[in-house]
Length: 80
Image (cartoon, rainbow, N blue to C red):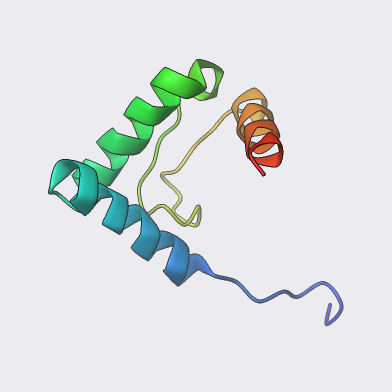
C-alpha cells in the first residue's frame, strides 16, 4: 500500500479549473464547465459527452468515456 500511494494535486486541479472559468466566462464553476466543454467540442469532439463538476476528477458526478479519456491523453502526450 505504501508503495502505491502518490501525492495528489486535486486542490491545484480544482483551482486551475475555476481559474479557467473566471478567465473565459467570468463565472467560476459554471464558466469553467462551459469553457472546457467548448474547448473539447472544438478540439476533441470524441471526448464528449463529458460531465465536469470540480475539475479535479474526484467528484462522483464527473464522467468521461474510456474513448474520450484515451483521446484526451493522446492529445496531451502530443502537445509537448
